Image (cartoon, rainbow, N blue to C red; front, side):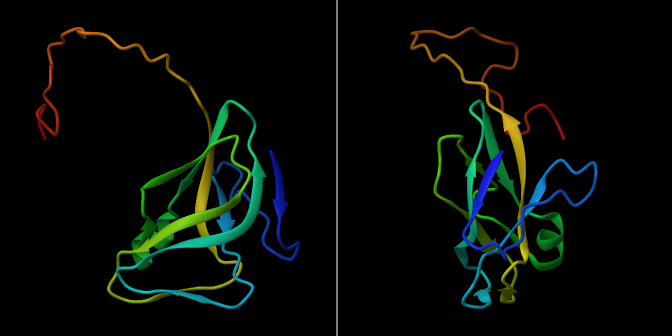
Length: 143
């Protein structure tokens, strides 16, 4: 995977351990810290421009430490970056806590998992097959 960075002094994405599934990405805030106010959301720049191989996607996910310790998550749960996107990676963070959170330049703000993409062929039909489950959902199979 190829990456271009706005600043060479920025933090290169990296896997924190030998068996990490995702690599960490960092905020790019050359003008100083950014305050993500309690209950607010913002797109946080990374300074990364990435060429993801065709047939793959980048799944941007919350960092568990920021989520449990500070209430910082992703607005959309998991964000997808398609392989044909070439713009800067921006991370849609939300502060679920009751306290403001300060994000520093170079601070790890999310993690990324690279995953293969399987595309479906979509066919319009008048009927779909019935199953035992049917339309039951939202916990209907038990606790």
